[in-house]
Length: 280
Image (cartoon, rainbow, N blue to C red):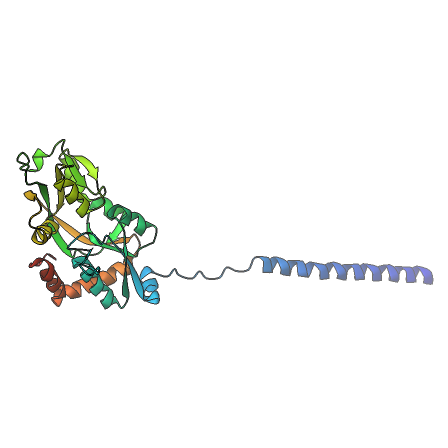
């Protein structure tokens, strides 16, 4: 009987020990599961482009550098022009240094898309198709397109006469849309200067370009054998161009531009280059 009781007690003791072992081994397993899937940390908000620009102390500006009087190099090689002065003043008011990155017109949009620039300052016309993809500041220039021919040309007197003729145009410009709408054959160029060169050498028949640019060019080089034969009745508004989602930076630009209008700075820069206020 004693042996039976001792055997029963021994058996109960073994069951108790086994039970404790099972309980102990399961706890670490549950802890590991908990540590493998911790509660997600709160996501940090993305830094805005304005914050990035201010943190770096500079803003990257895409521009041609060959489009007088808006963005070009003077006799000393210094980058200057109406757009350059306006955006430099905007940058000063925001509190950052302007860093200009020169490129061809048709490469400017791709450069902005790729993040090479923070903004484009190059007389970019506000158009519905561009507004779908990009952000714009408020306008800082208002201008009209003009039709230009060689001085020897006596057949082209208006836009209706350019159907089937060769027009030297930058491929993505709104001025090119005007040429296409009148049936011209587009000859792609890198910028204003090349368009004029082709026209002077009679390798193209016409070019449609910005009226302010043409007036300034003829003022600087009055002997160039070209002439303005017609003016487009529509007025174009030009503004600074940004990637979509640059809201705070656009707002900062708009605030600076509005202040420049109100204190006369924008008018002063405009009259320096055109002897007239072309900002509104």
